[in-house]
Length: 142
Image (cartoon, rainbow, N blue to C red; front, side, top):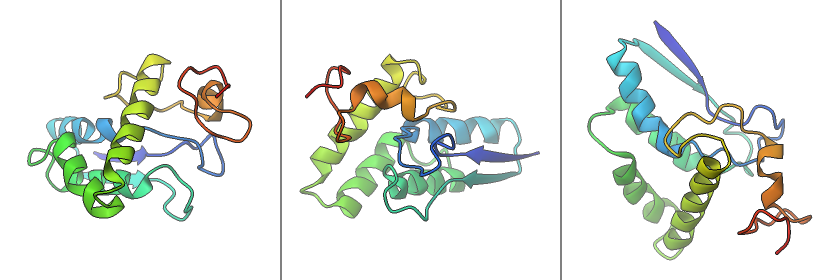
């Protein structure tokens, strides 16, 4: 059996909306392995430079597909984030990851470690101001 996985928000045709599935990738790969899956393909949009931490997602996806028992999600984050985004930017990237994962869990897009299929632009609309900035309260106000 083979898996064709959709890693992205396909309801948002520009792939601009957040899709915080990073923490689900390693557990999903372990489940695929346990189920005897022989092949895996992740469909996502790597051509859009404005996507949501796509390089991080593809790194976690690649490493987990290679050997899901070797690394944890947290280890992959610690390896990739400071080396790709820089040690200076790393604390802010971690803050963004935590924020998006928490919002997704709190507002019905999974528990922060599950699949986020069904996430779409409207899911995060309460957290955006008119200029697209995220708020802390979900009120649409800064």
